[in-house]
Length: 156
Image 1: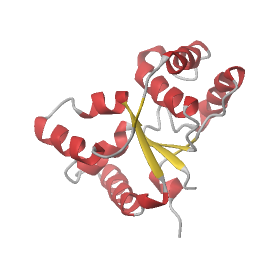
Image 2: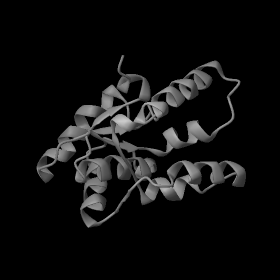
Image 3: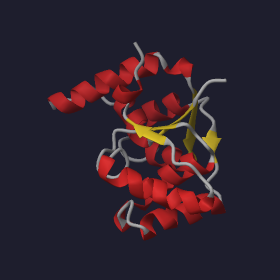
Image 4: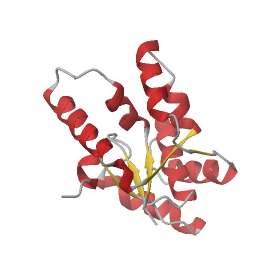
């Protein structure tokens, strides 16, 4: 059985975007493209939150993101997801202004996804908040997914 990977919106956005002039972002885009070419090692998932975020903004880029999302199973945002997202905010694992980031973490945890793949290193893939994320998941009997960037999920 393949490990499960939840793709947060930044992954789809980096794949759909034109190459950035910012050297760091351009590097992240390239790493994401290389990871995407090897994605068959994982069962991929997104949530309705990713779908909604991906359809916003520039219509050309939104169309590219929608094509990339086609065929990827969409996980539901049920009551358990919203309860865990609220708990993530309560323990300040994620700031109140970043509810959508709490939802990404919660949907991955509730659905027992192995990896949450993201380039959001401010609120999600951040070593300073990982312990708080795990602390929020435990009382619900859940294990937090391994939160990482595509670079961290590469294999030789």
